[in-house]
Image 1: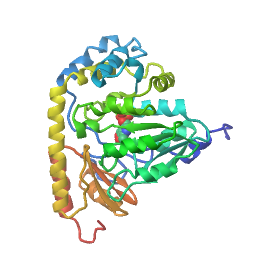
Image 2: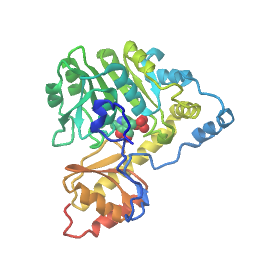
Image 3: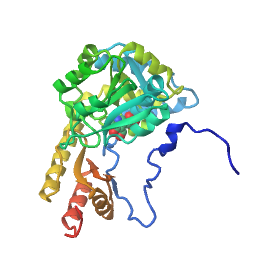
Length: 362
Ligand SMILES: Cc1ncc(COP(=O)(O)O)c(C=O)c1O
């Protein structure tokens, strides 16, 4: 039967998020270690788990629709006011709110590509059009290229530092000059999903950036360094008028009681966080060294993943990893990304790659 409906035109060109991927495709070897999503390979902190359990008896009740306690905690953490914040179901959820609040049909959103693979989808959902700028050869943002793509139609520019998928950060001086060069009608979102791996829990740069550049929004998440990807909680900090619009575009009760409690406790667990960050950095450096010993090209990363600029060999690299039961992310034509994982996962991967056939394309 033919169903008559009108899909938003920008949605026709995109697919649902990662719907072509199967965690266990038929005929493929079982996945022992998933190093494809930049999650933390550690369980949540014990204090956080205990806090979550306390919320179970209240499951019949809606959470606080404004996530007031978490907002207050983040405000203290970042030295900003609650009006300058919006929390939501993951930073992807908050970015979606921002794009829905600021963009519409015919508007453009500019960002570097390859980038976080939800950006094209979230832009399409808002009705706007994605405009891509290439990365530099060293995997960084080419801010000049991005600037040339900004036009009267541009509503939002998204920057990502450390960048997913390369792990390269944006230089502060260059960022300031870039932000100063933008016209007033453009809001810049600085996606800092991985910032703690680069700067620890030190939020120092953020309030200064927000004070100096009135059209800038910083996006953060509890999914990565804080290890709460499964709970879905993230936030944005920026000008109060923009944040008021972002809060309006939220799905009601989007942040669960569990997510709110866990995020508050995580922000109070500074010492444990720093220990974990040090362990991730050490594991990342070991993985980088191991891959380089195998004569593979690896960029120096400031995040919890590493990037191999393998261009079209990325897919055969991912297949070789899959044969050893390791899932990594291939970006055909660009490279492959490996999340920092368990020591055993790294050992298994490096051993499999060491035995690789000389006929392999990477
Ligand atoms: C750059 C970047 N931003 C945002 C996100 C979304 O994180 P979440 O929605 O879990 O907060 C991710 C997740 O992989 C990411 O890589």
